[in-house]
Structures are given as structure tokens and as C-alpha cells.
Length: 319
Ligand code: SF4
Ligand code: SF4
Image (cartoon, rainbow, N blue to C red; front, side, top):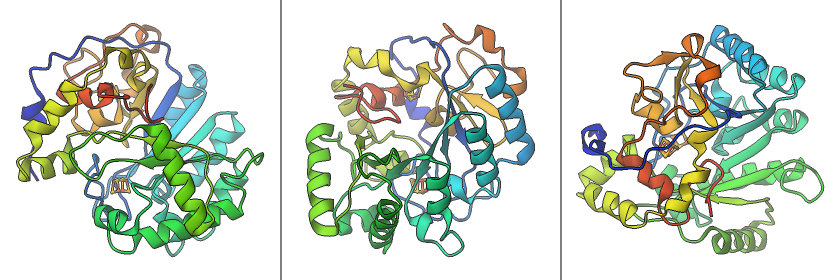
């Protein structure tokens, strides 16, 4: 795999500072049942990194002390982590909102048949990736058969009340472009998704989040192989919108890796970029939470993916 890191240096991205910390985004490990071409984690069934229970306990300690309101669970496939259900249950007991970034296919894997029921019982918000509503595009990006499994999983979630009006069980879908382009306008794309999924499969969901691909890890490497890395970066820079800076997720979120090291965001975690202006990685144990607000965010050229066009964050477009 090509290394994108040297190509992201000498950033002229504006300096940004953290605001009040509200969300822990926990990366429970890089093991995944899929190995998608757009993956910024380089996750796959061959990865072995998984967050252990003692790290989870440490996270709870700091979450309680710092009144963290939301856990945003990601991976890999976060549900594969053997501690996933313990983590969710304990967080819910503590009144922490839990978001599960789910690839849908995991809900149909052998041994995970009761996972959807568990998520519904715990009232976990699901943010599910479905990079297109057309089978060919999804199978091309995520692997053969993934579209049909995703549709089966969405039907399963709908049957449990997810995405249904008044159920309170939120089901949001994530779109990301197939290649080196910006996402189309989120609102009109959401309408197309809703119409198509309802008409073809009787599927409903709450919101669509359109997310821009970040040129790092597997996606960045594919761009280099196709000679598109520089032009994609230029596309991101040409579409820079300063008014997206205010809503950047790195301003209120702390990304924590499977070993308990902290980063400004999940993308920076994948680039091993130390938090803020630090020179080396910081562990949760060493973090001074009181000083975190107003600290600088560690930015490089990949940050232009978050500010291009309508903007991009874990919650979709910023505008
Ligand atoms: S994009 Fe998501 S589902 Fe696909 S390999 Fe990466 S972590 Fe797994
Ligand atoms: S890539 Fe990370 S650090 Fe850079 S702007 Fe986006 S969220 Fe912030």
C-alpha cells in the first residue's frame, strides 16, 4: 500500500482550536468483516487490533469525570469487539448516548443474528454505511453480495422499529462517493435514497449523511495508484469553504484508539498524528482535560476534505 503521509505535509490549512469536549469517538479496533476500497482505516478481516476491557474501564473513568454525553463507536466493525455489548450496556446505564457506526453486513453475519435486537433494546443510534442505493456500486466498493446483505439488514432494523416515525430508534445512512469526486448535495441525495429504497425494498430511514472521502490509507493509496492523488487534493482545496471551519467534528470530539491513545479525529488516528501541538502520542491517562478547550487541532492537507463544498463530518454535510 502507498503511504500518503509524505504527500499531506506543508499544510496551509487554517489554524483551528478545540472547543468544549462533548463526544468520545471510540475506535474499538481495526478488525472488520469487510475490506472496502474507500476505507480510511485499512480495516479488514486480517487485522487483529481490538480494544481490551481495561482500556474500556479507563475510558468510563474519564467519561464520568468529564461528563461526556456521547460515545460514538467505530472501527473496523465495532460490534466484532468481544466487549461491545458490555460497553454499550454500561454506557446506557450511565445515561451516555451511544452511536454505533455499523456496516450493516455485520448484522447478517453468522453469530450476529441477535445484534440488531440488542441495539434496539439498548436504543442505540445507528449510523449505517450504504455508499449507494444501486447494487453494482455497493458491491464494487464493499465486495460481492454486500448490497443484498445490507438490504436484508435494513429490513431487519425497520422491523425492529429503526427509522420508523415515532419509534425514537434512529437509523441514519452514510453515503460516500465511489471515487475521486465530492459528494452531491446531501438534501437532494437523501430524497433520491428515500424514494429508491422505499419503492424498491420498502425501506425507511431518518437522515442521509453525505461524507467526503479522505485521501489517506486505502483510499489514498488507490488514488496514488491511479495517478489521481494530486488532482483530488486540488479538488478539495479548490472547493474550500471557510464557513465549514466552525462545525468541524475535531472541535468537540476526542478520538480514542484501541490502546487508549488520543487524537483530534479518527483520520488523524490513522495517520498517527499526535494530538494538537504535541510531538508524541498522548495516552488518555496523561491527558489534561482541563486544558483541552482552546488547544490547537493538528491539521494537514487531508483536512481540506472536511471543508470542501458542503463540508463533511461524522454527521454528514456541515452546511
Ligand atoms: S469502510 Fe467500514 S466496513 Fe469497510 S472495511 Fe472500513 S471499517 Fe470495515
Ligand atoms: S481531518 Fe480531522 S483534524 Fe482535520 S479538519 Fe477533519 S476532523 Fe479536523
